[in-house]
Amino acid sequence: MFATFEDITQKPMIKVHKLTFNPFQENTYILSDETQEAVIIDPGCYERSEQAYLSAYLDKNGLKPVKLVNTHCHIDHVLGNYYVAETYNLPLGIHRNDLATLQAIPNYAHVYGFDGYQLSPEPAFFLEENELLEFGHSSLQIIFGPGHAPGHVAFFSAADKFVINGDILFQGSFGRVDLPGGSFDVLKKTILEKMFGLPDDTIVYCGHGAETTIGQEKKTNPIRYMEM
Ligand SMILES: [Zn+2]
Ligand SMILES: [Zn+2]
Image (cartoon, rainbow, N blue to C red; front, side, top):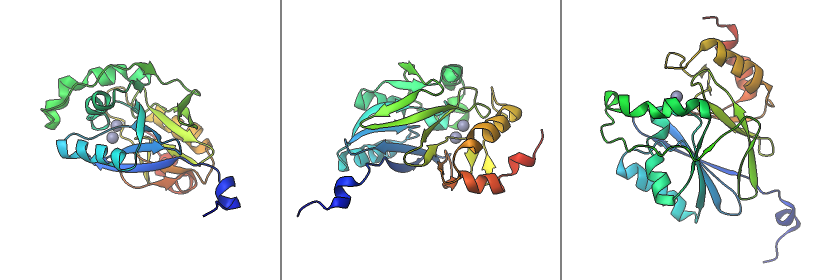
């Protein structure tokens, strides 16, 4: 078969794959492109079976992970950091303002029943606002979006019209602000000034629950009308 004109001219796209792990039902994202390179965002895999499931997805699709990053460092988003970093020999990237969040985990992991928490490696690089998260032929813009956590970031693809937004926005809701370093006012500012500044047709991939769009949240999200 000859490739058609459409095949040749079709713009490569980032593939977004969502896996849901651990009792917090946290969404782990694997992004990949036509080079087969992949980035793993927020690996929440805790049980052996969950770790095997993540690896099976990579194997089945012939993907080569090149980076491990966290949108923020609450325990549900980093439970699989050790496994992913060790198994694939990957450097970890986080925002520097969430270093304390990451380092606090061993003090409270048992409170949530994660007695088998495998200590995350320390970050090998920091994610900086407006810099790019690059892999393969792809790049995503790093958005600094504190409020739910002090060093929270999101990853935005203007070309493919999506944002991996962790626990900033949820469908019809938003991340809690009562954990250490959280602030309602800061989160509201992040959402109104940064997230709602993205194009309306941007798909929002959330750290928990289903996807939404910026346009839908601008219309329906209650944070706009809330004060605390
Ligand atoms: Zn969180
Ligand atoms: Zn979370």
